[in-house]
Image (cartoon, rainbow, N blue to C red):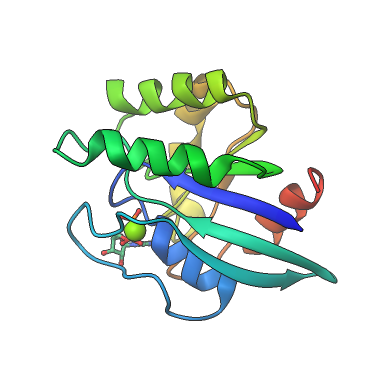
Length: 160
Ligand code: GDP
Ligand code: MG
């Protein structure tokens, strides 16, 4: 079974992306951080591949749940062929973003860096900084406008 985990800091749009890819509004999307604490699984079909996607809680939240969420995300990544690392690059990267990147590097799974909320091509300028995370080319997507999702899934297929 193919398995792909979606991880990232709170509020970057992990659950929105999960819902968009799974095709159902299963995961709770909210304007405030910390809603998804338990990892949530959903199955999607892409080019005849059945892929189990896992939505996880927001990392480096700085609250009392931080450690538990990180632990659950690590479990979610066990057996995953790759990890989708979602960021909202409309703000500058923070120290916490780089800490998440370091943690992912230690875990050793292939990482696809996804810049979410790139709602139109004007926003592509936000991508440059994400190269600095050290995982190669960042992919622009918009979970809200269903932009860039095939390019993302084509990249995922490379790891299955
Ligand atoms: P999570 O905490 O990472 O799971 O993030 P959510 O999926 O709950 O989304 C957090 C907020 O970002 C919500 O208000 C979403 O509507 C918003 N959001 C998610 N994806 C997009 C997007 O592609 N574009 C824009 N503009 N907003 C988005
Ligand atoms: Mg969520």
